[in-house]
Amino acid sequence: MCDTCGCNLTPGNRHLAFKPVAPGTTAVSVLKGLLAKNDDQAAHNREHFDRRGILAVNLMSSPGSGKTALLEATLAALKDEFGCAVIEGDLETENDAERIRALGVTAHQIVTGTACHLDAHLVHDALHHMNLDGVDLLFIENVGNLVCPASFDLGQHLNVTLLSVTEGDDKPAKYPVMFRAADAMLLTKTDLLAVLDDFDPDKAEAHLRQLANPAPVLRLSARRNLGMDAWLAWLRAELAAQRARVKTGRTRRPAIQPDGAQLHRATA
Amino acid sequence: MHELAVAQALIEQVEGVIRQHHAERASRIRVRIGPLAGVVPELLASAFPLAAAGSRMAHAALDLVDAPITVRCQTCGAESEAAINRLVCAACGDWHTQIVSGDELLLESVELETTSALAPNSSSLAPKHV
Ligand SMILES: Nc1nc2c(ncn2[C@@H]2O[C@H](COP(=O)(O)OP(=O)(O)O)[C@@H](O)[C@H]2O)c(=O)[nH]1
Ligand SMILES: [Mg+2]
Ligand SMILES: [Zn+2]
Ligand SMILES: [Zn+2]
Ligand SMILES: [Zn+2]
Image 1: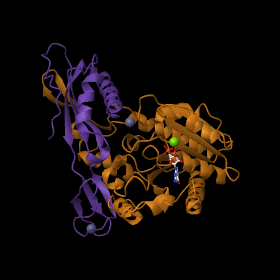
Image 2: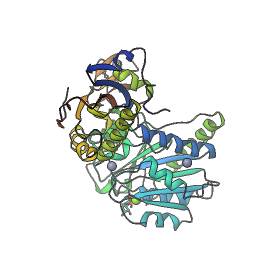
Image 3: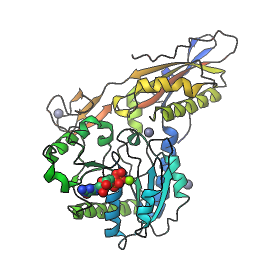
């Protein structure tokens, strides 16, 4: 990809470019995604993963929805079957990385300070601090936040968005940008459904469909080991799909950023 | 929230355009934001002057242009406008749709001052929704 070279110009919009507006002033048509630099870095990260045949999964949710607990249960089940590694993003503390390391799995903590989301550069720095030899599955636990993380491609192949049953079943309608980006939606802490009378898993799924998102909806409890088999089966199938892509030189991006065709069409 | 990071990315890109065209400075910057881009126009408008201070676009007007949400139905083929949390086909009601517009976050155009002799343009920092 090239920077500000005018390669986004198409026959349809070329006349807009380099139009003099007043003496000494020129209007230049750019038509470029604002986060192009992050996207370029994300594409580079994805090359790192694809070269090694790694499947990279980005976990997003509100704080406390159970991302780290899900990782603990997932790694306990899969760490002997696959090489696993984790990148943890938090505003402060190494606590989550320590919880992962306690299972004997490699974990790198990114402390973001004030930044409320991970970006592709932070993840790239982390990758170069980690030994990725033998890793099949890389999980990235994003900063707990239902807003910003959806706007930044990290180079992952898949987005997994968690919604715990204590948060309300209308969260997909309230945070459409986040839930539209999900390749799978996990309804977590289902062991608590019995004591909550107002969370309807079917309604949560219906709200997701209203966002034109066909992603699978999996209901599980990491703490009580309920519904974990379907989640683990989904991961195994996605890793197999990634290996098939890598063999044929293809890759996959999650549904975060509009693609080039849409950028062109937006201004046609 | 992340609008400051977005403003910084915008400034880097505009700086690149200024350099590429050997211009003096930018006087007007036009950005198109779809509601599904996850960026709040008002927050970007207030983050921009902070991020642009001291740069060659410190006095540029920032025009933020809305983009309507439009979806194309994969079932009946109709194109229709949609609401941010109801991206369904207005014709047949099916949710199997694709976004045609509304998720873009685009630097559309930049007005450059190519000679330093001319009077500076408007320095209004308020967003303009077209
Ligand atoms: N009842 C119940 N509690 C859970 C479950 N998963 C996580 N929790 C609790 O929710 C809190 C936050 O979990 P954590 O994994 O740290 O959330 P994160 O901020 O998304 O990483 C902790 O007190 C967990 O014990 C679950 O499946 N059931
Ligand atoms: Mg955590
Ligand atoms: Zn953020
Ligand atoms: Zn690298
Ligand atoms: Zn239709």
